[in-house]
Length: 237
Image (tube, rainbow, N blue to C red; front, side):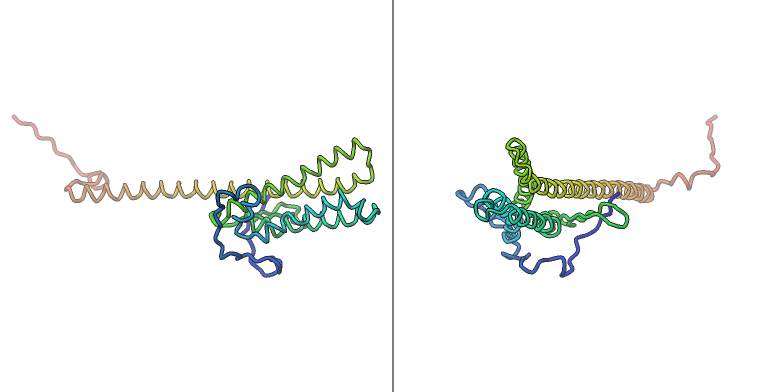
């Protein structure tokens, strides 16, 4: 069961370090030499949000790969990696998804229901922001799954704890946002179908009124007016 809602605009829902209206809300068109990831970031309506969408993911992967050489302590590296993964999960779930693609999800603890929110006007969503968001959302768990396979092959059992946390949190966001996106598309289809039905009913009613007006001007009689009146038959002798 899911519940629909509009995106909240309360101050506590927006982090202080994020400027939603950066660049005046205008999407920068990438030039001929601005393709790839750099072009997407330049085309983003909120590049600061896009940076934070990748920041904690990148730091967690960096600490996992090189933290052992830097710190030399598995416990320290493990704690830092898990904290960074938790920060990334919270940021993607509550901030970047809402600002980049107009979606947000959570589970209601009391009813255990999925709650989905989506932006009313999808035209305000930048295509660059959408690509950056979904690439980061699917890319991070994919990398952690590869790390999981490598860790199993190398029998690095203790490091698999970090990898398992990365996979679990990433997959949780994927499931939540996939359900939220499908729910938003279903809402749009329902609105379109409802509008088409209302338009068809209005057209039928308009056509009925037009027919009555045409008959009235042409001197014709309505079926309701002629019903029940006596008819005469003339026979020429």
